[in-house]
Length: 203
Image 1 (cartoon, rainbow, N blue to C red):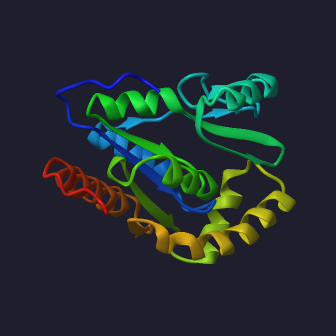
Image 2: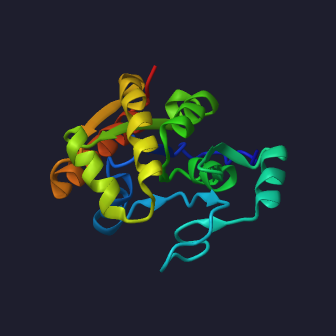
């Protein structure tokens, strides 16, 4: 835990979550490009994909280093998918909160549930992103071209259960037209920031 900074209002951790194929990465990139939001860089044990940069797209770690970080409490949330570990480093998020900044966490639903449990309600705002329908979600997964048929089917099956959890979030956004989605998410964040500034955070 970082030492508290006196005389400064707490920032806001915006959790952008949803099932695979909802378009989380695309929306997050749009928010950063248009509105200059800060993005939390996740850690993972999977190998970098073409064009990915360490410390920018992900913090790429060995499995041993990642598990040591888990034991030392260095992650705000973590989970395992398809034999790879993923997690959100705790320190950058806590620093942003203490310095009064808004930071976006683009994470899966399991990770979002952990953040809800570990961050105070007034420090977070959780947005659930969905594709317009199951057919569009499947098309997006296949267009990635990064996974085989079995992995795509597993993600689609898991998504049915994940979508049912969306009602626990602070806001729900359907990602149909990307420009409209980015604007809608931005407006939700602005309202959450305004409530926090007014001292009327979530209950």
